[in-house]
Length: 471
Image 1: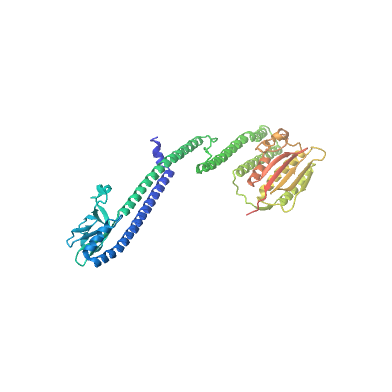
Image 2: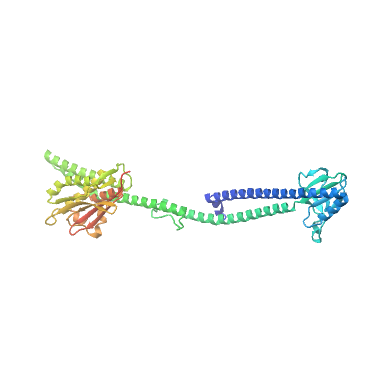
């Protein structure tokens, strides 16, 4: 436990909590001291107003009856509950009447208002006050000299202001104490919880760095910053794992599927060198080798294109394109091939089908799908047909390429779009098994999808494009 406390002190949450606590305490102290000072000044002003109202009354009593009446007046008013301070002294400062027993030296020497509060002691008015009768109190007063040089003091005790200041300060201390205690408890609980979550994230991070890409950062379900960060990092890890799996699959496929054409090229060259052949035969061998090499280059280019598109990066330019025009170009390109293979080629495209994308990539994807459809439709049925249709579906455009070939079993349709996958029915056809894979990657790059569905007979390949306009 003690070893974890320094770690808690180093967390940003703890530092921010301490800073907020310090700022709040400072603001509370300033506010309380300001309020106390303002209240004391207001009470002192009210006391001075009370004294100012009292002095003329005593002056008029002196004018009417002289010193005897003034003494009786002072004695009478000093015995009233909550009375002011009254003191009548001779010219030498000896107290003659009033409720003040002793006074701080020098107070009677200055006429007018006392500059600062002074100490005094007063007679005990009751038995309950006997214990505090000789204790010093603070007061403010007005001092005046009568025509016969006697001194009259009228004042007011500052006990109420002092009690207010004491109560306010004690309330401040208690509030700061409870606030500090509560902050420490909350800080300790929240800090420990945050530290445990950080430790779990760190442990998961170490496992992932050790090579376990299946690991994920923990999510508590609270929906706070830690959960949002973990969800984003988990999505990133899932993407990295997917890319690594794709890279591993590409490596395995290259090692497995490209070994055969390379072996054929080597055997062909070795056979040509083994015998005594004429120049024409050597030429045929070299031409076949070049053809095989061109096929390998096309295969590698397709693999690189798929990897680049699946990684979400492409230097290709995108803009507003017309799917109808792309379909017309592909139909013009493949109509002779379809006619040569005895396949009827039909196009049914709507006008003004505008989407955002890359014309060359979409044209290549559609060409791959149409090429497969013509290749597998020839020789199947009495009237083999390939139909290309452009339809509006909800908020998207969809190109359907339908053929009358043998089709693909529902269980094998997902595998048919993977790299280098060639089903048993297609082993006799030329190709590398990358056509549908490249088409799927191109559709993914455009935010669309490639879907295979069955027909009776044949297969339907649907290319769906979201209806996004160019920016």
